[in-house]
Length: 213
Ligand code: VGL
Ligand code: ZN
Image (cartoon, rainbow, N blue to C red; front, side, top):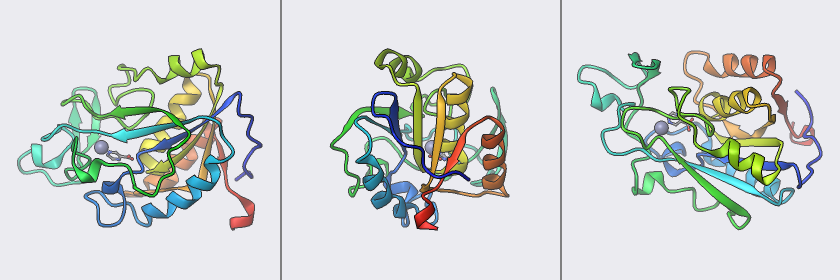
């Protein structure tokens, strides 16, 4: 675990992933302690000139919802056209209060909001590619055109949307730093430990504010 690298506002962007009501306590796919990231992110955000936000944004009856598969229950894994896919409780349905960003986030410096998971048959964890690994969100081109070469990632959930985004960032030749104090995990059957290991192997910097621990 490293301490948080110094931020260069010209090359670094903060990507705030899926800090939405449904991933916070009381939400449809609540991540334990999920809302604890809000004040941490607001403080970290002051170091950056540019924030990118993401919002999980599913149509009703999305194919990743267990309810769309009779006889299946949430958190089971099934085979989709593009490979294995975890089934989730209905969550982040477009336009619902659960899909709204957490009201406590300070969004003043956000310049871009990426919505993902809107194609009915494809889930989308990463902020760069949907789960078919083929449909890009456009963020890589956006960051390159704006001159950003390093992404700092935070939000929900560490082991799904944050990890998949960090791994794609490395594949796309961006430097990637995951701010662990500003993330919380779902941790399904050891998924957090696996995600941390795979990120480390891919050259993702796993950073923590040493004073907080
Ligand atoms: C997420 C599961 C389903 C996430 C989104 O934001 O990590 N996880 N949809
Ligand atoms: Zn989702």
